[in-house]
Length: 445
Image (cartoon, rainbow, N blue to C red; front, side, top):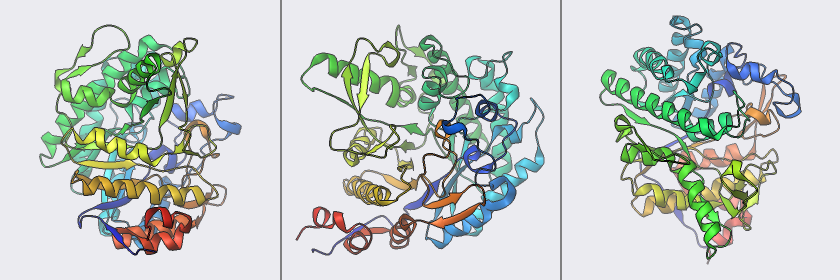
């Protein structure tokens, strides 16, 4: 074995990503809580319940775990429904709870990355009179909420994410019907996308007004779409079209000030141009796309995993490390710092997760060594949590969770990631100890 070490910059951030609804528990005043209670919406009829009980205070012990494992950052989100339980009525106690969390991270030597919207809305916004993100009024409502949160947290936070995965949120809620409001109407998606983009731009301006030195990003679920037959024009067309209307849709709008639509002319959104300080990359997997005239809902594409990928059994994700490098390659041309704000795989057995971590972090090291400005990595996730429509069936945690007892048990991947974080590197010794099956391919000799 050739011994070697892949080192990262001294200021590199290593952490995990979390989300309010998936971790806090008992989010009764939200559209997703109501959604859970509709038959057939969530796998096996699961409900979030106490989730990871962060609203009950268990965030503190999980922050301790992160700090003890050598992490120096953590991403968490603020729940709009807790901060503004009724329209125009703000809860100072909820804001203080989040302030304590941010201060708690700083006290443990962890940099907080705070997300302002992660898929979930207060019930008052989601009611049929306001139509949530379908109505332009949402932009002003979101701006008011953002101003309150940033004012409360700015002494402890200067790294912000506005709206998590607007592309996933738009597709899941209004095209595939797997998130509330459960619609399958392609025509509405452009309106929702426009409101999400305008809300992000408004939040960006407010954050910089209150905190000029802040760094603000828009986390995008970036998924390469590869044509099934690269020399077959219909496959190439549908792969490019799906990429432009999903992975690059919002990033292109932030670059050009124009939002692409599935049909018709692009919509001008000048306030969005340049409204991000870093690229927030959420990468999980990639897809092979084949043209299929019988599948108009997915823009005439039929997706499958690359043949050399390793599926996690969910039907949603497969480990495909080359796609991670392709993502960096595409994003680097934006000439902005890059933070990996989510990356991970569901695997209760943990063998796949360990391989995934090692292989993807190696791809990230390659990007760093091209002098691409990659500044941090947030693994999804710290603890098993409630995975939306998949409920508790899809386990992403470095720590296993028993939701009934709230017992956390470290998986081997927690030790692997701790070794990487503490050494700020991926070495042949780490690979030999935790994923020996990968050693010869990564460190030949």
